[in-house]
Structures are given as structure tokens and as C-alpha cells.
Image 1 (cartoon, helix red, strand yellow):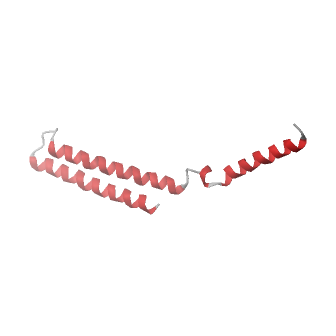
Image 2 (cartoon, helix red, strand yellow):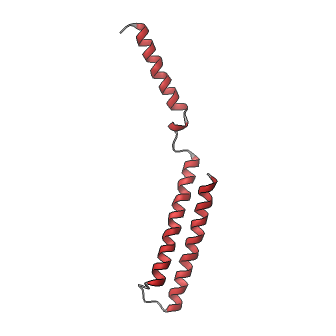
Image 3 (tube, helix red, strand yellow):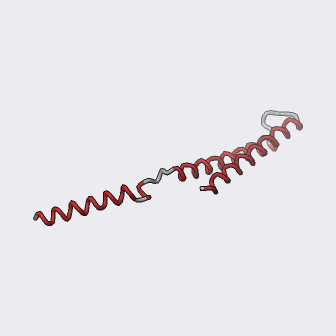
Amino acid sequence: MGTRQASLLIRYRRGWANRALHSNEARPNSIGEFVYYIGKTLELMGIACLGAGLYLGCVNPFDYSEAKAMGVEMGFLTLGVLIFFVGRLIEKRQ
């Protein structure tokens, strides 16, 4: 390989290295993406709380009285809705 070909190859490689360092694709873990995943996680936690509330209210696996089972159900449903909407708000801001 001649010196001209070697210098072109070196310039080509440096160009790709600089492009990778300064492009947005090289930094996928930015703060915005991190906050987006926090919002998504909170949404999923809210949905899990909603499911747990419905399960505890309908199945009543701990043999609570009807009033106590309804209180637990309403608590989980309220918590699930609040967590879900906070997660949705955080996700939509990003």
C-alpha cells in the first residue's frame, strides 16, 4: 500500500471516529432518555398496583372482611392511578 492510500485510510478512519464521538447516536444514555424510562417504569408500576388492587378486592386471598377488602382495594387503585399518571406526566415531558 502506498503512502497516499495509507493516509486516505487513516483520514477515513478518523472521520468515522469523530462522527461517532460527536453524533447523538453515540450517546443513547442521555438524561432525556433516562427520564423517559423512569416515566415508563412508573406507568408499569401503576398498572401493577391497579392489578393488585383488583385481585385483592375480587379474590380476597387473605379472608379480610368485606369492608377491609374494599379499603385495601380502593387504596391500591388510588395508588396505582396516582403512580400511573405521574409516570405518564414524566414520560410526556421528555
